[in-house]
Image 1 (cartoon, rainbow, N blue to C red):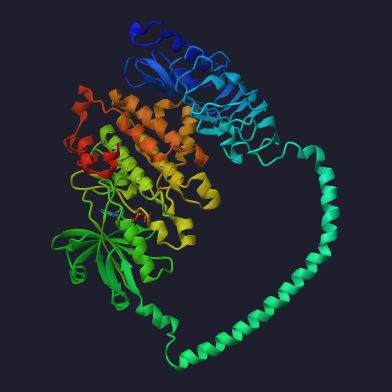
Image 2: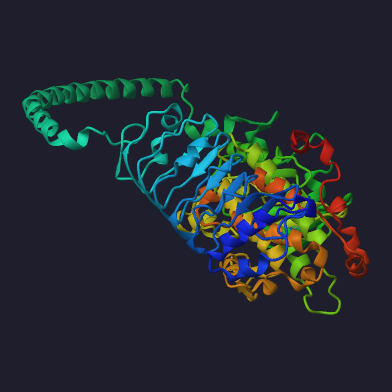
Length: 607
Ligand SMILES: Nc1ncnc2c1ncn2[C@@H]1O[C@H](COP(=O)(O)OP(=O)(O)OP(=O)(O)O)[C@@H](O)[C@H]1O
């Protein structure tokens, strides 16, 4: 142990031996010098550190091939996180007997074979074990650690009965699925059935052949009685309706609709008002009237997927009007309810809805005008021109943080509803206000748009499950967030979100390839790559982005985990960088772009 040097030599040797087994030139070049030094951020890609010790190894989706020696983890005694998920690593699993602090293990999506090692049974802090989608064989050892909360061995070649321990029985059959020779509860296959299925089938079929004629007669009689009852009921109903209509007691459906009063978050709106149109303010504070809006001069901001956006010049200052199109056929009441849900989302990094308007022919959403434009333009406009003001690392990190906080909030806040939290995250939907605050907009609109149109147009960054099933969810938001981060760190435009005529790439595949094939120098946008002191942070953000962009949704992290990790990236500045800062960029520092009132928001109170 050479801990007095600020790092642990045996751990370093163990990691170098581990990486020697993989033919990955990116890691070979990146894993040089020291991996963890005291409490500095980790120097190596995929490594997490605590007090100069290695606490995590996360090498996911890097196309790693080769074997890992069984004894390779023995010296990593402080390891709490281990993930090699979604590579092509083969050979037996490792010996975990010295890794008593392991909490999280994910080796899924590889080609590991052989038995599940018994050393895993001794890990008393283990909370999560993912071994699915490998070639593991033999029986499942009797895991009985009460710490174990997640367990998945599906899609292997495991066999025999699932041990009857409290812990293993507490997981559902999906944890065991895809192992044809595994049997007993919670799997759906019965351990005895294989031997005597033919006998039972025989006796079953002879019994059922006797019962069949009786059942048939009972069914026919029941059907005749039901038919008879229907005819009587229909005749009586017709008579009753006739008599009520004569007395004008029954109101026609259309008339009934008009009489409905709409309840919208405490605002009662009469249907005739809907007919005329009604401006409803999201907060008590009524700032202008419909007439002011109609009189105001307006300038087009752009055509979006939900309709056109205008900047309307009111006396009190500009506001943005979004004219919604291609909506679902919602009644006034339903529209108000859905929009109310959007208006109720309040977070310092969300552009809040000022007001909304509904009439038969016109549906509008009104927002505050963000005077510093959107982040897509900030990142891409004027590139290579002398007038370009560099978009520095600290500003990009602030955008990453602001968006992560907003998404985390939306995900927590919509957990109990069917509302898709965002559904259309992209850099042009991230705005910068006059105080350089980062504001996410266009959230929650999936609930208003006609489903086929939403499916065709909405999603900016198309996740694999969206492409195959047109399904948006929290996990597709995480994917979109990953793509957004990749655009921020690479300065490249993703093909999914690129306006026509832009030079775009399939960014997720490009970055994975770049990491695999060692064009590291090319990954980061030159504008930030020159900020040497920030390179660790950039690497960290790249790594987070790549975890968000893994193809299977269940393997993507939750937004709260992502937000915490982005939050933990330290902003560093050396004097050289400082000299390069332009005055405008100085104003886009972390403090100003994130949430000035963090401590007052409910989200941050929870932290
Ligand atoms: N509140 C706002 N303040 C300033 N600019 C805005 C505001 N809302 C939208 N914009 C800008 O107006 C333009 C059009 O926005 P809109 O939301 O209609 O389309 P989009 O973001 O390109 O696409 P989508 O409909 O998929 O979100 C964009 O450049 C957007 O950044």
